[in-house]
Amino acid sequence: MPDEELAIALRAAQDGDARGFATLWRALHPNVLRYLRVLAGEHAEDAASETWLHVIRDLHRFSGDLGSFRGWLFRIARHRGIDEQRRSSRTRETAEPRAEAAPDAAAEAAQGASTAWAIGMIANLPRDQAEAVMLRVVAGLDVATTADILGKKPGAVRIATMRGLRRLATHPQIRTRQGV
Amino acid sequence: MHSLRALLRALRSRRHSRIGRDRADMIAASHPPGDDHPGLAALLEAARAPGTPEELAGEKEMLAAFAAHRKRAARSVRRRRTASLRAALVPVTSGLALLILAGTAVAARTGNLPEGAQQHAHRLFSALGVPAPGTGSPHPSSSTRPGPGPRPSLDVTALSWCEAWRGTPERSLSREDRRKLTDAAGGEEDIKDYCDRLHRSASPSSSPSPEPSESRSSSPSPSPTGTPSFTETPSEPAAPSPSGDQSLSTDRD
Image 1: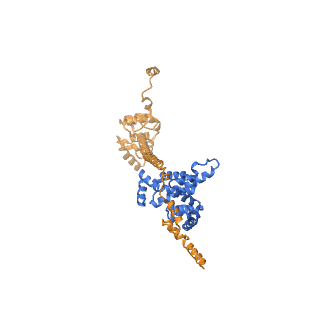
Image 2: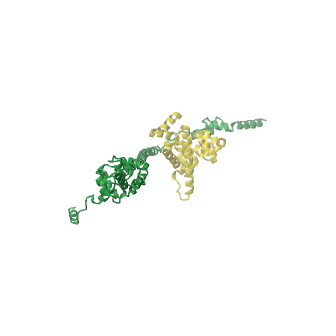
Image 3: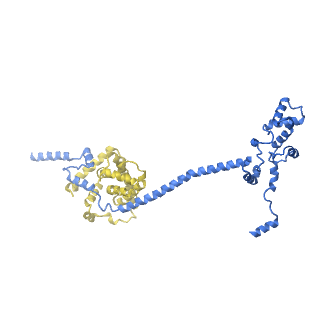
């Protein structure tokens, strides 16, 4: 989806157009969900829903271009992801294990298996590297926006991204996997 | 020797393939990592792949949430609009009402209401000094009304002249003051009349007029004092009917 079309969809959604919002959601939701998988694991779906409900609620107040909307969206996602994580760690003893928590073999067969595998690999990185790789490489945010979201200096974000990519590149499972 | 060359090549290639900060920035900006990292390239490609149907399964719910919020927002905007309109109208209306009330009160107090309304106000608020219609105001401010003769305006000074004139005629009043008094009264022979009127208006309105006979005989026009109306009021409203009538009326009801 070209950015120009997405920018038009953003304006339309702000004016209350459901089709514009649908376009925006279809284009950006997968990456929000993947980022939240890295951040909140099995609670990613809930956190993603909360993120979009927040966006729906405050969209009329948002002013900015598509780039700043991406930044806003992922900032909300990060907050919701951390909230979900905190809540789940508080209720871990009482919570029942979710049935879809371990998709392994079944998910391998399904469409997007390689995506699930890739996200799982990134999630295994140290937290700051994993977040930096997700926001910079997968979500496509620039250094300044990522640094803003993570509350870090731009230099630190660049280093975390580099270290994460380096670690992935040298990971034995990835090195032997010649495409999927 | 051969093994040493291989080791050097391996070290060099390892140095080349090592991802640096700039390289990482390029990879982040959607440039493929290159042939030296096929595994990483594949991983990032998979991580950036378009959304799967599974991931996009929640579209309907999200669109429903969007529509519901739009409806709620539209309703609250309408409510906010009416609320702001109300917020603007309430002070304006109450201010106007206050103005009208205050104006009516002042008009009633000074006796400037239309006759019927003044009568009504007088009946209701006579205790607050609302005069009956036609009697004018007990205040000197109503002196603008056209009266039959010259009306007293410099109450206190004129009153002192009158006192002096009454006490020992021709004597205690200086020539200058006497001339002024004559001017104010409108003539030498009108001084007594003038002074009488002045006296009545200066004395408390609830007290009976000191010289009713004189004032009535000398000025046929309605007297500007509020005195008569105050004494008359109790009898003015529809007199309560005798007890017999009252029981009759309750029977009728």
